[in-house]
Image 1 (tube, rainbow, N blue to C red):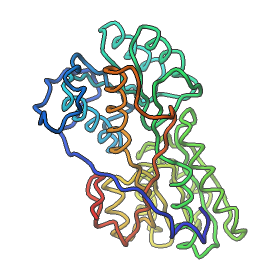
Image 2 (spheres, rainbow, N blue to C red):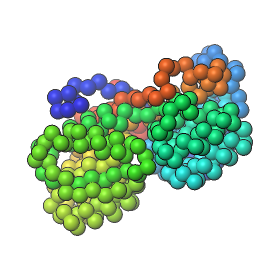
Image 3 (cartoon, helix red, strand yellow):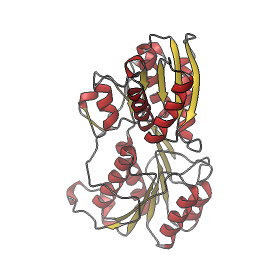
Length: 335
């Protein structure tokens, strides 16, 4: 979406079911009571355990992902285990192998790398355990039953257009990039560039990898500021890195001179948008995507099919600016 299209795009909303936090280690929880009249007809065939393996629940985005997965699975009659691999493929392999050895009915996985995750997903499927991916993809199809992600390219172009407008289409900027093994990092960066490249007076003067982390984002922003003290803008691959950049800019007393863009739509970012500290963030529909992942995994377990035509599924993101930031509450965007 370019300048003439972005503001006219139709974005999908997300509805978050607020739940208790799940930790980063594997824990089993009892199934929650559910209203039988609202459950799918096949729910009577449900039972056993679904493993939910995510990245890092200390990040609000991944916490929402795991909370939603646990709630949806328990509503369908499953027990759950939760674990976090912190984007470390070796740790992911250990967690996946534990789930396989435990004989879980299915796995909801936010993978640690597109290439790095292929073999272990195949191992689970070969053991008769269906796997549904959420938030990030693997580099092969035909193994996972479904790969459900946010439309990162659409979200990035929407965010970049709002940011470019705030920059008045000129000035210098730096970029904070996510973890290189995560396809989302490059897709978002490319989406930003697809818009920014249209404006020759916007010039990149530096970039750093900050691995989706707030503290690392602050440290990398401090390094970029030391080389570019008069920079005008920051584009970041997620909110945590953007918030780290804001911290660095505040300490340098330069925040009022710099336009910052985030991505994810977490509550701290929404608050920063409302406060005028961030131009915009892009709300990923993590709740909707995770609910779809659990529903499709349940369908595979009970019927052998996901019930949808495509393995790869993308859900549009929502641009969050001052106009609607007050309607965003912990990933819930009210009408």
